[in-house]
Every structure is written in C-alpha cells, then in structure tokens.
Length: 276
Image (cartoon, rainbow, N blue to C red; front, side, top):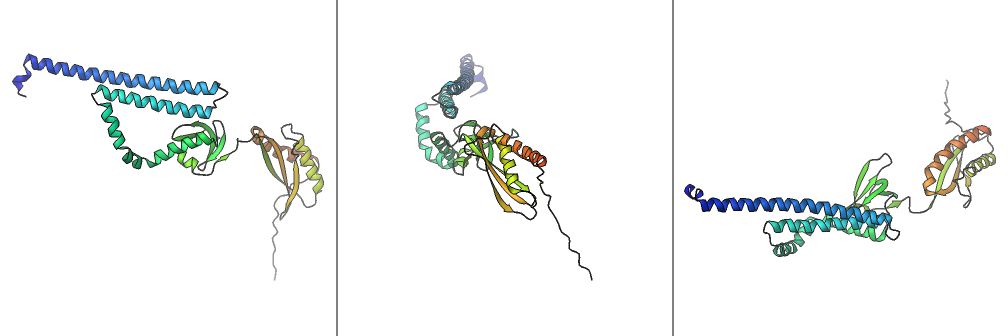
C-alpha cells in the first residue's frame, strides 16, 4: 500500500474500523475468559460445598466432580474465546480429533494420571481426611483432583503426588478402619519379676479409658536381650486415639515401673583386661 493511500479517507476509515473490531474482539475475549473462570470456580466451589453437606456424596467424589466440571467449563470458555477471533469451532474440533493420537503419545504420563484419578474415585482406596502413605509419601489427604492427590504432612508441608504414581504403588491407609492396634515394647532387668511387670503393664494400659477391653491388652516375653528381658504389649484403641495412647503409655508405664520397683536396665558393657 502506498503512503498516499493511507491518507485516503476511505482507507483510514477501513483501518480504524478494523482496529475497533480487533479491540472489541480482544476485550470481549478477555471478558469471556475472566467471566468463564469466575463461573467455573463458582461451580467447582458449589459442587464441593454440596458434596460436603450431602450424606449420599462424600467429599472425595465431590472434589473429583468439582474438578471435572471446572475443566469442562474452561474448555467451553476457550472455544468461545477462539470463536471471537474468527476461528471455526467445527474445524477446530476436527483438527483436535486428528491430533488426538499425537497428543496422547506426547501426554502419556498426564493421561495415565487422569485414568488413575478415575480409578481412585471409583475404588476409593482413600478419601479426604485420611492419613495415608502413597508413593513413598505420608500425610493427610487434602484434595483429590483429576491428575494429582494433595497431602499435608504432620509438620504441615504440602506434597503433591501424581495419581499415576499413587495408583501404581502400594497404598497404606491408616484411617480406613475404625480401630488400630498399638504395639509397645518394654525392657526389664533380669532380676525383676516378669509376671509382676506384665501385670503392671496391663493395669496401666487398662486404666486408660481409650484402650479397648475387647480385644484385651496382650503382653508376652518377646526376647532375652543382652542385658534385659524384653516384653511386648499389644492394645487396641480407636484409630483417632492411636498416637495419644502410644505416647501416654510410654510415659505411664515408666512411672508405674518406678512405683513398683521394676527397673529398666541400661546397656551393659564389660571390659576384659589381659595382663602378662
């Protein structure tokens, strides 16, 4: 285009109109995208809140469906944004269909995480709020979405485990059952009364209201150590009381041993000195 043509009023009008159209499309596309994100976020939050209040739908399924709805809305929003710039959505869908194989090969890991997320939701080896060990990481399950599981460790670190890694490894769910067994070990001196020590351990554990009477507290001699008799104790409690029972038992049994004259031996070391 010649410089003289730019000064032509008709040409200037066309350029100005094109600029206005482009600006309008950009503003509308930005508005659609922002509005779509707000709507998608609101839908995700609404589904999660509804699942939390519903007795038929647990939080795990609610989080999964919320994530699914969010990305579904965002895909529609992206198509609407592209249509503002004159992109034919039908041709776009056809192009995406033709590129599915290539995308699938490039995103094998992502698709495996998606498939694993579906399996986790269907078979539910763990749910929100469970204390689990997955993919070599332990923590409380905070979120389960299409691709990852989010854990919070005991010291409140955030760990994100890909669902593929979670589903493909051993899953240990410490919260799955209502009760857990607390395994404890104590050592007494060889000169102490074994039966008395076991009675003291049982009485101490039974004095804790959190310890179940059925099954009853179990004690037995587990080993003859180098400088001690080792006693194993097994008690059952509610899963949520596990660590409280464990820590209190270690303290209370030591105090009960002291009160009943039962000693916990220190490691002994004998030095043999050869003369001559």
